[in-house]
Structure formats: structure tokens, C-alpha cells
Image (cartoon, rainbow, N blue to C red; front, side):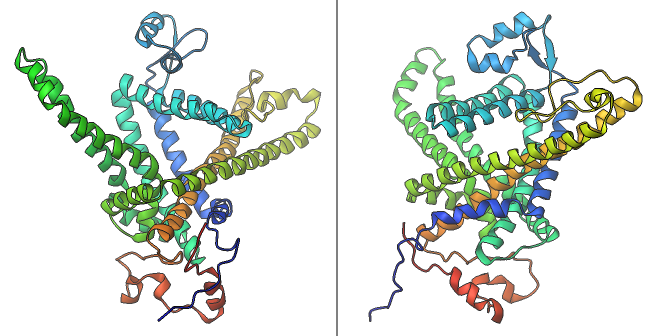
Length: 435
């Protein structure tokens, strides 16, 4: 018996344009609130830990991180300026370095300079290596807190995005947080598990290197067991590629499937290796679209601050001397302003502090959009990859196992749709798609 298939439309069958829904989904207030709270928690943790300043900064303003990225011999650099240089916090150093590299990568993307994009992304990974190598205890504590916070916020954002993309639903903040708390262990251990597996496999190679120190026996052991070490290194390379390609899909997997960390790892790896070109295309599309959206959000934020500053100028007298002391004029590259007059009294100092906090909130909302877009776009990509690789309908999503009714344990797509939403549900079905 031959099944009748609907005709494939020349443009309607394409999946990748659905990624462009990420902007609308990212600016949803619930997601922005979750991202902002997570960002505030991470920044507050970093600021508190930065009370202990350990990063050496040369008199010319070059930090040891800049020296580590741009040249060899960072140990000599630290030794040279340990006494004469200033001291900064690790979080502040990483934040400023990451912000510069992020904007340089966006500039390279706008110019079509693939080399600049690659170099700036690679520099961010080098910065993480520097942090763990030279500030180990600080980095372990800080990034553990960051992972825990982002697991909670990211899981909630992905759950909202999954329901919104699959069914057009918009769950409330409390519902999303409850889901994230319930799946916190899976969200937290998904990335940690892969790092632990690499560490365990790498320990075998390290052990072989230790055996190599034994006179006579060591040399023979290294030569004899080197093929095993090469096999272990190949396995690490396979896992590493899977992590780089599929890490973005781990949280969306748990949000869609209501599953555990092993299912998140399995699906993310299988989707990357089953269809790597499509995964890469979706990722690049989301990155380019995200850069355009970020530029718009940044311009809007800059316009907001400039309009406020302009009308404040019309009200202040004496050539705006007091306004300049309260709030240095923002520019597109630096919303906080580069220079400010010295406060004349305590009230001016307090007012300048309050204005600084409000401008920081604007910056925080802008960064929160980036976080929200990241999780929302990757949730969409997961839905598209699942449709292509597993042939799962785009509107199929599972609820949590702690729901009250047995009906809620079934896929949402299997539930009877309301009468007034029946037409819309049918229009969103994509039984057969192609690109």
C-alpha cells in the first residue's frame, strides 16, 4: 500500500529559517529575568572573590593574561612586575578580556574576516587555560559556582524555549524554575561527566609517562604501550570534537526530553556525528543572526542612554558641570563613560554611584539578552536536529515525571488540542522536511 504524501513546497519545507524565531523568543521577559538573575549572581560572586587581587598588571596596563596570550614567558613577566605592577582580580581581568575579544570577533564577523573570528574565540579558550593554570583554586571555586548558576538558569530558559517553539506555550517563571530545580543534577553533571571521562582516559597516558621515568623498564614500557596511548588519545579527540559540537545541545536535550545527563550526552554526540554539516550550518546561521540581533540590541541600549543624557543636559545649568560629575557621557564602545569629574561632595558621589548602578543594569540586560539568545537558539537547533536525525515531529515534547495526572506523562503532541488551536497546531506540523 502506497502512502499519499503531501507535496513538498520549495521554501516552506526548509527548517533553518525557524532559527530566526530566536530573537523574539529571547526578548521574552521571563527569559531575560532568569538570565539577568544568573548574570547578577555570577558577577557578584566574582566581585566578592576579587577582593583578593592576584593578577599582576604592568604599569603600562598590560595584564599577565594579555602577556600569556600574546607572548611566551609569562612567568618572567609576573616575576618582573610582581613588585612594581598593580593587582587586579581574576574575574575583572577575564571579564574585560572576554568583552574585548567578543566585540573583536563581532567586528571580524561583520568584515567577513574568518581568521579574526577564530583567533578571538581561541584566545578566550587560552584565557580559561591561564585562569586554571595560574589561579587554580580561584578558578575551581568561581567556575563551579558559575556552572551551578547557569545550569539552573539555562535549564529554565531552555524549557521555556522548548515549550514555546514546539507548542507555542509560554510557561511561567515559577514553572520553569521548578523544572530546572528538579533536573538540576542532570543539568549540572552533563558537562562535568564528559570532562571526567576525558580526565580518566588521559590519566592512562599520564601513568604511562610516569612509568617512563623508571630506568630501563620505562623506555621499553613506553615503546610497547604507545599504541594504547595513541588509541586513548584518539578517543579523547573524538570526545573533544563531540563536546565542542554538541555541548550546546545538552541543556536543550534535557529540556525537551525530560531525561538525564547520559541521554543528553548521547543525543548531542549522535546528532553532531550523524549530520555534522547540518549541525555546523545551523550553528553558523544562529551565530550570524545572533550577532546581528546583538548589534541591534546594543544600538537600542546606546540610543536609550543617549536620549536620557540629551534631555538631562537640557535641564542642567552651568554648562552641565554637575551632570558631568554625576554621569560621564556614554559612547557606543563604553556605556559607562570613560572620564568623570571628581565628586564635589557626598551627595554628588552618592548620585554618581546610583547612576552607575542603573547604567550597569542596562548593560546587564544587554548581556542577559546574549545569554537568553544562546539558550533559545540552541533549543531551536536541537528541535531541528532531532527532526532531521530521529524523524521526530517538531511539536513533540515531554513533560516532567512529577506531573499530577497520567496524561501529562505522554508527549504533549499526543494530547488532544483545544478546538480553537486545532488549525494552528496543524499548520505547525512538519512531517516531512528537507533542505
